[in-house]
Length: 44
Image (cartoon, rainbow, N blue to C red; front, top):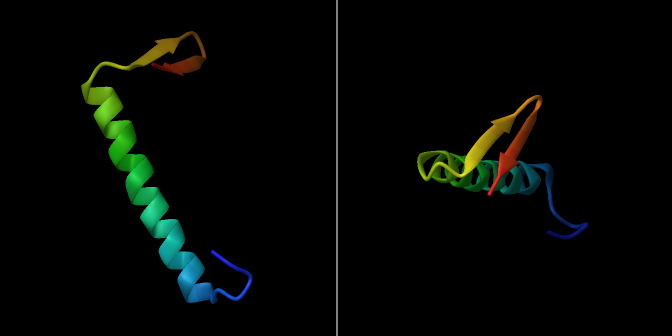
């Protein structure tokens, strides 16, 4: 990413990051690495 990126480039970067984070969160959940402790979420 640079200051020369267009809005379209930034939207694409955001979507790519969103996909990666969602996939990682799902994998952690399936591996039982996400715990709820009161009002906090702990990811191991």
